[in-house]
Image (cartoon, rainbow, N blue to C red):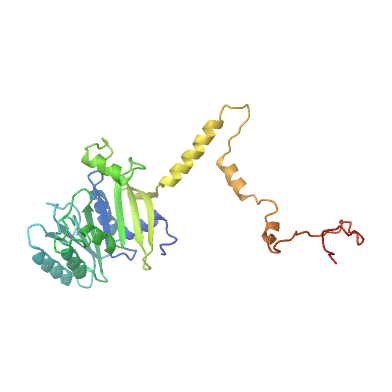
Length: 308
C-alpha cells in the first residue's frame, strides 16, 4: 500500500502488524504519556496477524515481561559487548524467521558509537527494530566529538517511523509547554498515561520524504482514528466565533451552514474564462465585436479596428 494515499490510522495499523516496510520504529515518550501502552499494542497487533514472528525483548527497565515474547534479554546486567553477542546468538537462532526486536529504552546506550554498532548489527531484511527514547531524561554528549550529533538526533535520523506520544486530553500545546508541565510537576490529574492517547506518526518513505499524521489511539479497544490538527481547530474556532458574532443581530439568519459554504466554494465566478485572455495584447484595448454592434466605416473617431 502506498503511503502517499494511506490515511494515518491505516498506516499505523500496517506498521504495528509488520505489513509496512519500516525496519526501525522509534517511540518518543515522556512522563505525561509513557510508551508502555503502545508497546503492548505493537505486540498485540503482531500476534493478532498469526504470522510466525519471533519477538525478542531487550530490557533495561522492565523486570518482568507480561507480554507474549519468545526471548527476553536483560541488557542492564551485562556490558554492551556481551549484549551484542547475545543478540547475535538469538538472531542466528531465528535466522530465517521474521523478527521483532523491542528495546524498552534507548536512554541506557552511553555513546553514539554504541547506537551505530547496535543498528549495524540488527538491521536485516527479516528484522524490525522498535524502541523507546524518553525525552524528559537528559543524555550525555560524546566528549570525544562535542560537535557531533546526540544519541537522540542519531536515532531520529535513522528511524524510518517515529511515534511521538502525548495524552489525548492535552491539545494545542507546544513542546516547551509540555516540558514546563513535566519539570514543574504541573501534570493534569487523570490525563496522563491513559490507554487512549494521541500519537504523531512521522513516516519516511524510501525517497526520504517525511509524512506526518495525527492519530488518536485507543489501546484498550485497539482502534485508531484521525485526530484534528491544530490548523483545523483554529479554522473551526474562527468560523464558530464568526457565527456567534452574527447571532441575535437581526431577525433573519446571517450565518452559513457547512453545506452552504461547500456549495458557495463550488460556484464558478463570472468572467473567469474571459479573464484568461487579458494581457495577451499588451498596451491596447481588447474589444470583441458581436452581431449587434453598430459599426460605422465613416466614423474617424472610432478607436477600434475594423473587425473584418
